[in-house]
Image (cartoon, rainbow, N blue to C red; front, side, top):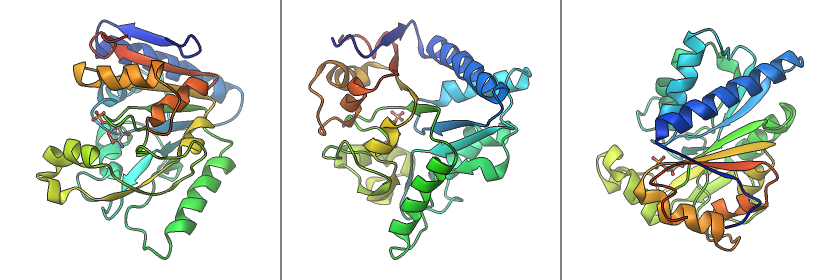
Length: 251
Ligand code: GLP
């Protein structure tokens, strides 16, 4: 195993999520105390759910305010409006934003309804907004079965930026139950690129369950390759994998 990429294996996802939520809350407070807003990169999928539940709990206990937090989500399905229940905009409202004190104007998620003519300007504006916010202090990641981070499917270059991407058939299959059938799953998305993600100052990748064990092993111990975009994290100065025992079972 590479010794440059720290791995923390926890008994279960709740313990892992609680630990990370406390660390992120401390980071937000430290950055706010230094006089600026904290910039968080956020992820969707089933994996971050217990983490968001912990952030909400800390907020309710008065230990974490989002009043000076700016967020950038990794990605959004192309063709889905924010009102669609499977849009990442709707997901984030439901699972986090509706329960905390984040100002609406501090939330950034790519717009899935952007027209083809406006797409590249929209992606460039997303990158500019991240830069103008001072860059991402902390980036949360899950991992897809194809090894993707965000929606950076196999073949996504190390220096890719926010752009339109085509979803891998495996990724679409994994999303099919939630959409009520494969034919309902969008074929494209807008995703931050690998280069965008790797510029975050601190990164945590979360993975739970047996189904993620093989791809987690490949990402951590396999070659650094654009065929497994999570493997690029091996070259990041401050990236950590937070695993439950099952996701870490092949290490
Ligand atoms: C989607 C998201 C990824 C996420 C992945 C894994 O592809 N775009 O950000 O990491 O799903 O999803 P899950 O956490 O549900 O396994």
